[in-house]
Length: 480
Image (cartoon, rainbow, N blue to C red; front, top):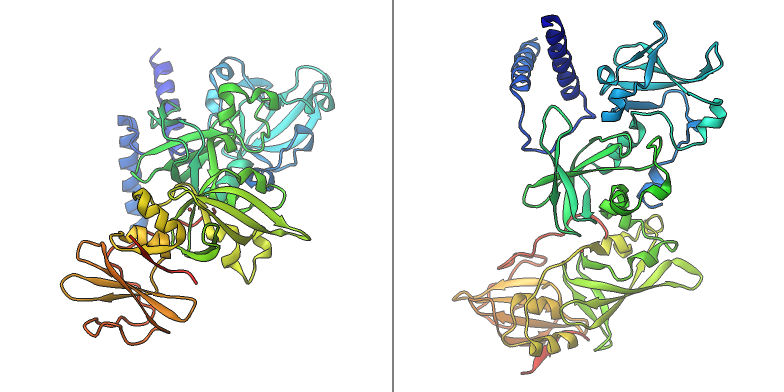
């Protein structure tokens, strides 16, 4: 009995050490380690000190491999579920005996092809990368050709090809949540988890990619702007996941990558073939841009982080890589138009015209304004009493900033008619008055002003930079 208990403890300790030295096993932060793991970590740290002193995203990147198409060298990890601990999967050819899935857990199996046993049963052969030993999975009925076209595949095996590609393509990337339900780890040494609920369309960053389960082999750990981490196990190519396409419905549907996450770079891959799926999406400007204002029928400067909804994307006749994009400003409600290049590969040399360089997905900067002020902004007019945000909505970002006296400061806009618009703010950031002078930019219209260096962009209140990705009375008119 003591020998059995000792063997079990040694097996658990071995599995724990194997799991934590395996780069495919990842956890959300905050999960607590067991005393056993703490002890192992201390030993490992001591040893380390000693040594030191001595098409869319899915279709483009994840190919489905049916068992019939498996090639030698493809790698899988043994990720048994409770059922697999009862029904053994692999056999040791040296003994002819089945091997417990628990002893093979987290081990990497390398596909070696298939053959037939002496009694005529088809066998799928592997070499265990961790211990160098061969194993096989025996097909209980029919030939390999009969079996390989089914979705059943080989039990317990999570396809590591998907994990490796996801790690290469997703680490550090910005995603947006597409469902409310995710998980956090509760066991450092096991697969325990807790369901958590988050906001949809929330911006998150990929901080770890590892192995999940056979059905959903890619575990994607993300972190929100508040430092909270959560994960989802998702399927990518569906290689060996054991589920048919029609089984990804209801609750299972969220474990498809595209139902859990939206990749900013995937939105960047918009083309004439898939542009329609982005109509109705909320986006924000990543860079300052000029767009045609439908109300004024003039080009209007638009600042970074301005929020719009895409109303339509109309490819140009004879050149569907270019299109006219119609957008609705979510604050003022008026419409804007801009031409953009849809195909990122055809934007070489003109990258600032690529739709993914102009817009990013998700909400922009929220601006609270009155209806009277919104009416002025719709016309592109700057008026007394406007805030910095409202001036930016009407006129874009300033070309120059000048500091005055008594806390006042000036934004200077270079207008298209070779004139300058000066907007004077009081100490509280509200427009006090405006003035127009002949341009180009030269001596200040107010001799008390301290001229800013050309190109300087120091601001009383700076605008945060957008993240890389696809796709975020009377007034003085700014447009000409």
